[in-house]
Image (cartoon, rainbow, N blue to C red):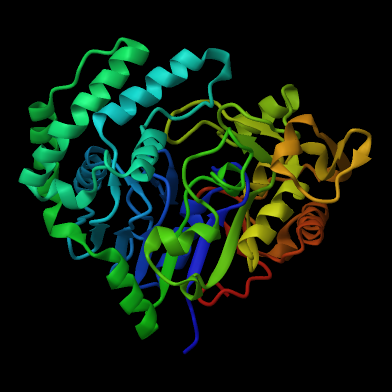
Length: 434
């Protein structure tokens, strides 16, 4: 049986425009599955004059017949999820057990996780990581510690939740008081709040892994929706300035409870330039008028935090590493229109460190590396009305072709604006995009 599944991941530092591509592919899928991250990820879909910015709900919500699944690998914030469900409901989009399911095995973000996240960042001062303060890291830390973890299954079992909180909260309160002089959280008040979340979510809670394994065995098409970007992966990114989950395609199997064979074809999302939010090495950053121009034209402000993003030239050396890591099948290139008006554009083709050009990308060597640039002609024309590759200016075409050469993968889709229709199909081999 042919595997028609698709995995969509970011190949940079996040914010590559995954929401638009997931929405485009979702119409042909039975399941759209979030397998990593949490409310620290922001995915945006624009249809006509309607803009949808989500953090936890998978981006298949606009298509009938699609089951959206929040899998076990997600750090699940029930308050945020219910806010998003209610907000979509006010816009005429109903999410219930018929089109949204949540893994009982997903770990729950609790109030003390958010408190620890914000207080620890404050205490680190200039050495902070630059998290979204959504409690994601502390939630995943409890998952690893195990005995202090709360899972979605506990939310729908009031007695179990109360019992766990009676054990966990004294530990958390003692730690937060000792480290940050924080006021204690009340176990019963916390239990009541989260029991109510569980009551509202109970019809959607399921054994998601079993559901997806059966779907894969039947040949039903599944799309796995990644969060953040590969350079923020907890194992393979620019440590310690990374997120707290496996956001590459390597994380699909444990994050969704499916065999590696279910991953399918991997589409790697890239921006036509580079951005990063928060602290950490960023070799191609342009802290100058060029970076300011990219930020303004690209509306580079975080979907989750609203923070201005750091902007710089496209880093083909890092992207090739990320594409190799996840076995990327083809690329989807976004925000090419942002480069219009530049007389020339630069692409980082390699790093130099200690006077030598690096042969392999090494996340631990990035901080001391200098980018090696190649300069290409820019173009003056705006791209928003182009609908074929041939309609793009010759210089823009040449830029896309050079990215293909440097990364070693074809660019299947080119986005030249936020709206659904502002999409060019180029060398795609993905079924239902071609």
